[in-house]
Amino acid sequence: MHLTPREASGLATTLRQRIGMRSDLEIVLCPNFVALPAVAEAIRGSEMKLGAQNVFWRDLGAYTGQISPTMLVAVGCEYVILGHSETRGRFGTPDSELTEEHLRYFGETEATLNKKLHAVLPHGLKPILCVGETLEERQRGQTDTVIQRQLEGALKGFSADELYELVIAYEPVWAIGTGQVCDADEANRVCGLIRQHLGTLFSNEMAEFVRILYGGSVKASNAHALLHQPEIDGALVGGASLDADEFQQITYCASAR
Image (cartoon, rainbow, N blue to C red; front, top):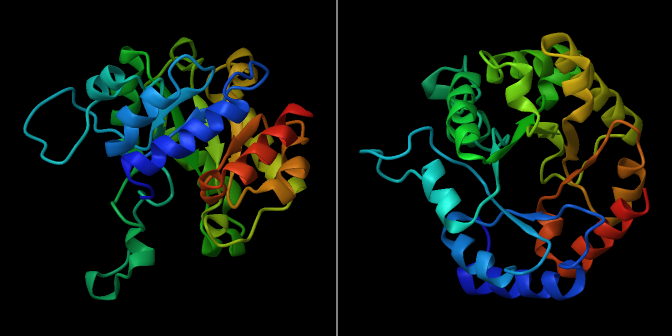
């Protein structure tokens, strides 16, 4: 929830001038909903793509405050982020004990993500599905189990042929906006686990085709180590994407793979 439409357009214009015509990378900008038209106009004619930060699972109806897949397509989106850690719920906690950390903030579940995936794919939108464990889950040694459960729940009912455009982002919750970053070797291991589990659920061909990103305090100083891991295909960049210089440096790290 950063940048007004005017501010987002200015940042997108700067990025277009610096890296917008590069064809060796796929660069997707995902601003807030109200900034989508302005950013779409700013990057028009460039190689950069437009994405949204979320979506609802119906095309239209009495769902006040929600944005549909058809609306995203109409404004020029090709991608949409689903299941970011900040939209997922933390269930099993009594209401009297809920904090912002438990809510995080909108109660997204694997069931709602499954609905959203079924909704966006027929419209040609490419989903960026986020998965990741909390600090508590990691400390309990549950990382692998949590990742597998999230994948199975969100991808229930799909065939391999339907998911070749899927992008998955491993974003450990404890590394989001905290300045902490997952060790590059461990990030690579979990991304490899994701690919392996996709092969088990669907097919090895599909698992190799799907792009798997790392997200979680990615910045210029750690991007090279992360993006040179064999199982990591790219980065889901958070706060660093608000700084044109920082984001440009991250793209240099990606292109030097």
